[in-house]
Image (cartoon, rainbow, N blue to C red):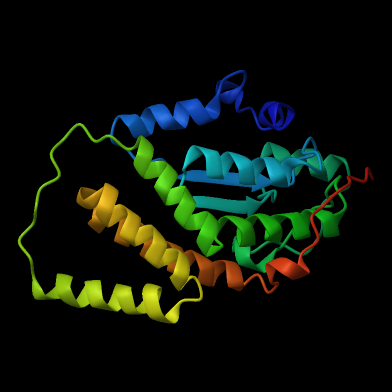
Length: 226
């Protein structure tokens, strides 16, 4: 959101196609990891949908999304203090507890529900594996991917991953579709694909700590000014 970029002095990201910028980096053989924040005063109700769309289209596999908070000593903290919007209860820095130490302009319930909706959407198995696929289509390393000497630990890791992702995990159907496609179309990326798939297994555990299933999270539709 352009207004939110101005609000947090991210002027270098204004007036540019950020999806194209991400893909350019990927084209040069690098993986982009992104940090995303919701809760700025300028964020509209559509920010949740827009962030999901951006994360999926850009192929940013490791997308870390958090709620805005105001650490003591920052300009944001001082501004909110002058506006009498700080809450005495401090924030922990742990995104999974949904803590806020200020009164947002957006309705608090709308903000938290929207945040939870982002996490449960982008780390749902289907969306997550689609995002890896998008990344691999753009990923063109300008170096040779070497074949490492096979070790027993690699074999153990392979079978543990297959068991966790292809048998135990609720998204196993999407995993098998994804991994078989990689083996057929991009076999040289099989090790990387398995590593990224394992990341997703961890990320889903983190998202589940939020405490709501996707069906229980209403999609935010409005913003309230306070």
